[in-house]
Image (cartoon, rainbow, N blue to C red; front, side, top):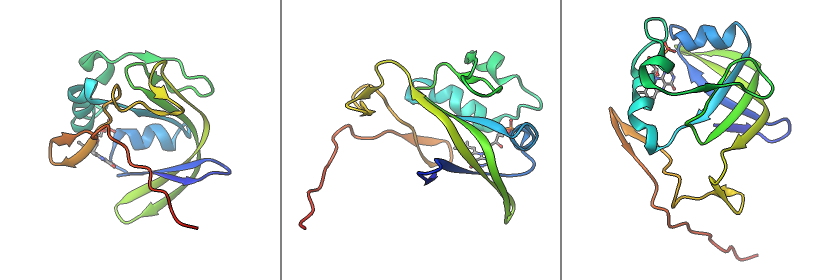
Length: 147
Ligand SMILES: Cc1cc2nc3c(=O)[nH]c(=O)nc-3n(C[C@H](O)[C@H](O)[C@H](O)COP(=O)(O)O)c2cc1C
């Protein structure tokens, strides 16, 4: 989730037992890659298998690509990429809150229309619960508020 504009900060919650936890807490850098329905099966695989026992790039066929400002790779098949350096880490219940400062963020060619996701093309993933996922109705609503 986004939490600050200046500096640009985002937040993820991660259990300490995750392999990803070590990969963030150690190097203090990470990428948030935004997947779509085009790679829903690969995305669920990454969410159900640990990198301690699986090479998720090899097993899913997803492609690592060099990031622009940090060492961890971006995932080519994801539509947007937010490169972060760790700003703060806070233990919270049985999870750690990792606050990342976004050093650079970019989307793939053709993904944005008027600086927003083109929802006719980009089927963003929403987790409904369990192994169920849905995407958005591309119709957008722009309420006009009275003064
Ligand atoms: C839809 C979905 C959402 C998840 N969200 C989180 C989360 O917010 N934080 C977390 O620690 N694990 C979350 N998980 C669990 C991890 O993705 C899972 O434990 C994964 O195997 C961790 O891989 P790793 O050990 O390579 O880091 C989620 C799993 C799924 C399927």
